Image 1: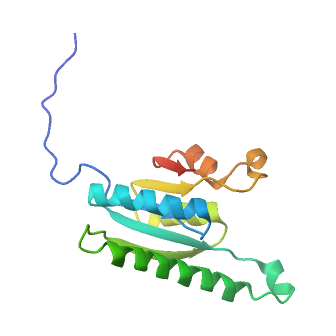
Image 2: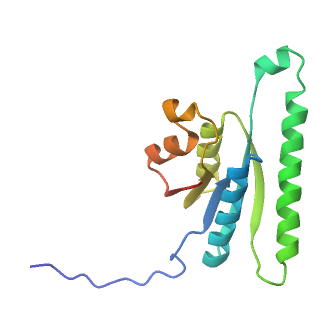
Length: 153
């Protein structure tokens, strides 16, 4: 026989408060941003758009302007997201913020999710063939098992 426990009412705890989405400018990551924005809007959650700026010591050794290039990508992402939210202003409101972290994408997203206390993580499917063998960022995030992870194709 099942014992019944009185249900407690918890104010303001239904649904996610922070939905984190990884963005790197790729088509799949931009689809992930759009999907996560819809989730955040419907749940009245904060959309945390995170770009993980790669740290490439080897690129710097060859004189490649890696830092400037990744900074440009971050600036373009912010501009694109800002433009999209401005177009939709009045139709719906979306609370969002953009953050840049440094490192490899997996560790950067884990750090971001921990710091922002994310309730869910959304990422685009990897577009690199080698990830089928080694494992993509999405697969690694799912395996860590700390947040619900949605992978957008």
